[in-house]
Length: 109
Length: 178
Ligand SMILES: [Zn+2]
Image (cartoon, rainbow over all chains, first blue to last red; front, side, top):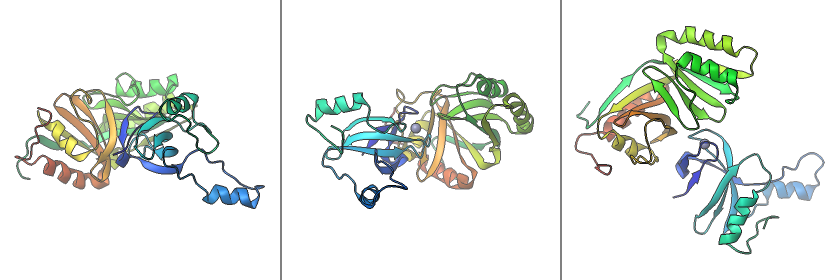
């Protein structure tokens, strides 16, 4: 069972109260992007065994989108954070580094 | 309905207004507290006295609860206080149903139906919890240590009533919290 703490209401929400929103921190390519970048935005996703960053929505609660950092192997949750950011906050990255030294994900490490 | 180990009643109708906007705005807070007559709630809290109260729904939304018969008057009062402020105020009274679940074992009923930690140390009066009850959205808070007030959409009130009665069938107590 996966439980995530919603950063807006502070509630420990069960997976069944949440809606998954897929990979976090995508750059939305749009008019003016070349074909390769656009294709990568549409179809290419991280599929890691380990550290992963995702978007979730507290759909049976406050209704807000937020971010979560977790391990896909152990379901350990490193932390959740606001949706209003394009990259994971430093304290989350530091926490992951403490538990999974040498981790990297996309352009983050 | 068959025997239950806690009392389940459908109460109401209750006057309910959805108020959205900047929750840190003094004007918005005054509009809600002026009508509800209770303190403005903190995050995930509900302040409720008798038929009036305010529940924290999300970072930009509260639910203002009033007696059903006074909703028109209260709505006007709030509109007046809020005029000129960016906000959304809607009367949702007829879209909601209210249940009261009371008895020493009332926690068990909610615990069977929602994924919420209902341990007496975790869930205490004053907290407001939006969640799901089996397959439908619901929200509840505790009036006191043995009484839950629960709201759901009126369109699923029959389903919720059946769920609650079924979970409360006499003899089906789990006894985990005793
Ligand atoms: Zn939330």
